[in-house]
Length: 145
Image (cartoon, rainbow, N blue to C red; front, side):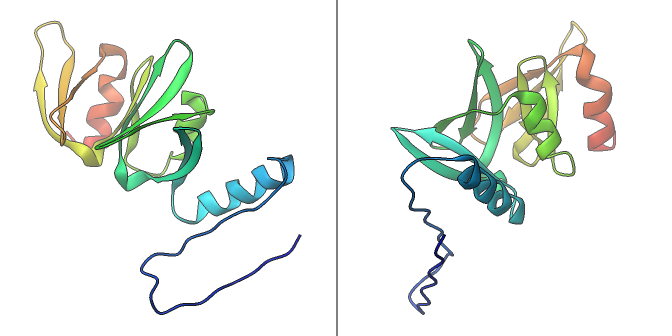
């Protein structure tokens, strides 16, 4: 393995490029180590792999056993399961809100109680996520209400 570092005063944000023949276990370990540095997760969109920052993520959702990362402008697919995402971001603003969804509390603008005991969370992009009764206790606890 060879490491190259290019310094430039014109760079606004640090960028890491990994060149490899194939995505081996060693490459996966390198990616995991990089992600731990600033709470990112890898997501795929349009045949490319991206590092998605937690601060950009609205929520995670499962559709047909595939997990998607939703941001304001884009949707990515990740190979992680929801429980792995919960573990990875356990010390952050991310919380499980239903069997199929994880929500970034930093992106919630308003919450509204529903008649059936659930809560509706309105996000910054005006989408709404339903917090199921099973997860309301932890949701309120994390919000401090």
